[in-house]
Length: 80
Image (cartoon, rainbow, N blue to C red; front, side, top):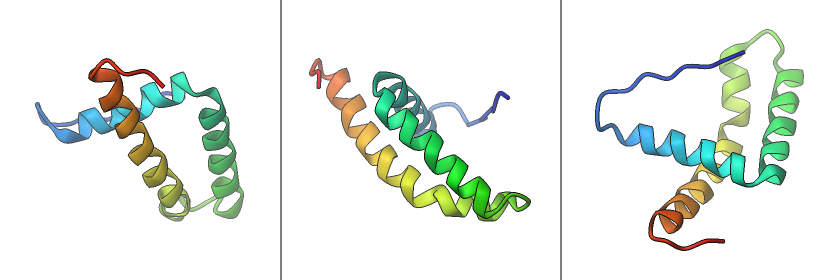
């Protein structure tokens, strides 16, 4: 299933989403951990999308912070 996000032009949210996407693509172990977290949240709240999203939010915030650091370093020409 595809998920779509729409933002205003020049929104900071665009960079956040792209950084997270690219970070997951570059770090398969993090992508696997994210998948596990999504299943965990789904199993806790199978019929409640807002609670599902709230449950995995802390994990995503942590991963996004790491992704933005990684993304900005990559943009500056540094590799990890």
